[in-house]
Length: 246
Image 1 (cartoon, rainbow, N blue to C red):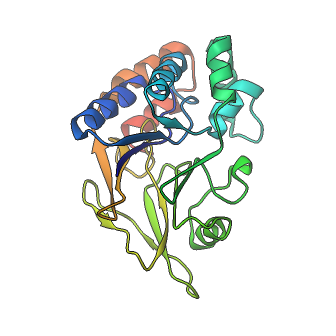
Image 2: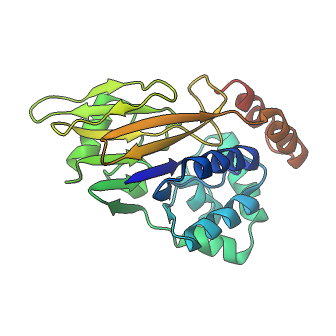
């Protein structure tokens, strides 16, 4: 099975549309959205409605912390994220909020666990960004592979019994192997707000038969999104960072 995995769209219509166009060309068997449809970006309503249509067509969609903040209000967020969450909450309609609120925290498919943050206490929004957090993530599930987002930094952690995980930064558009003797945490990059120094939108393509995953990069018009962020009155840094991938 070939699964396209999109995470951290963050109300960025330009990035979302560019990635969906690339996904359609690849024609995967399944589509998974790993959460944070909203937050930071200027078009939350469009992104939620697009996700609803994809789910109606068979896609899987997971809840992220910014999705939750847009429904119930922000808590423990940075000032920019807090401000964007309050703005987003005011933009969403009743049905859009209900859709976000009803999303599951985890879904398991063919031995792969999909979650926005970590398999360890998914509702606590823990980051998987080092060996210790990857080990804790794997310890919380029997799944051979966990696929998550949340950090905006594409990374693969490989683990074998009795050994601590090893971190690997995958090259863009180059398949990385997922060997049968390892367990894995695959942290996919962000569609709508990359933070690895590459402003191109990022999504993952997981091939469960070939046992490999690719981080696919898709350029889009970051300046257009930044202009919309400024026009919405959101913090200017949220637009500037898109242009540098930070």
